[in-house]
Each structure stands twice: as C-alpha cells, then as structure tokens.
Image (cartoon, rainbow, N blue to C red):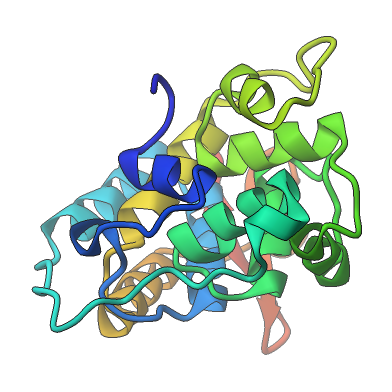
Length: 223
C-alpha cells in the first residue's frame, strides 16, 4: 500500500510481522529519542554524517524471532492500539515516554501527549482525534491522508505546515529500528559529540540549544 512500510501493514492488519522485518533486539527507546532530538539541531552536513553512520553499521543476523511488542490487543482496543504499536513496537522504541517525546518534537510541539494518554490509546480508553492521527503520521513517516483513511478519522484540512526536517527524522527513526542496542549507543554518542557549547548570550535565531549540562547550553549553530 502506498505510503506504508511492509512491516507496518502487518501491524495494521494485526498480523505477526515476519522475522526478517523485525528488530534484532530491544533498543533503548530514550536513546533513540535523544538521537532524533540532537539530530534536529544539527546543520545538514552533520545530519548527513548521522545518516551515513546508521547506513553503514553492520546489520547483525537474527538469532531468533523477536516480535515487536504489542502494548494492547488491537482487536479489542482498535486503531489507537495499532498506532501505538507502530511507534512503540515497530520503531523499536519500547518506551511510552520516548514515544511521547518524539510525537512532541516531530510535530513542533503541536501534539503534547502524556505517556499515560498514549497508554490509554493502547487500551482503547482514549478516542483518536484528528491531531493525534496527524501527529502519529508525521512521526511514523506515513502520509497523514493515508493513515487517516486506514483508521477512519477525517482530517478536514492539513493540520500543520509541511516540515521536511520531520520527514527526514522519521526516516532516521525507521532506519535505526534494526540496530542493536550497542549500535544505537554508538549512533547516540556520535550524534551527541557533534554538539558544541553555545556561546553565552547567543541568539535563538543563530543557535539551536539542545541540553544544559555543567552550567553550559550545548547545541549547534543554525546554517
């Protein structure tokens, strides 16, 4: 189906994902969220280095079946559970808090969900809204119209302006899903090492500030 990865179609249909399409081992979800967080701040040439690192890391062979975790029974909880499973499991986040962080970042703060709300979606206790569908679509790298058609939620108009950087980060997240935990840590360390101290008094128009450590903001200049 246009706009969907093959592994995602299995999850949407509530079918087991073939072993060849599943993550090799559980990855640290907060590390994956931080990789995206740091990469969002980097200029294009440094983001390209991150993408190349992910692409060249050796894909370890499967030692046994590892199905992406399902946080809820989609037959009981509906499409809310399917969306959570796509992000929590098929992107190998395995963390509701990391999922919430990514939804917030890749929608530029438009979709702010607590981890408990995402858990409620997984149980079917929280109804899907157009903003939720659009936010999950952007974070998953799926065209929002395609995802809305599958889950049966009408999107009366584009929810937010197009964001090519969010599209790029959704692709980065997808490409990281098959890495081992050790490889994720390697990408995390390399991405974080590209951040530099932000000069005192630097303008937000000129610098992306990412995190505060030891009395200093760390980030990257906007170019």
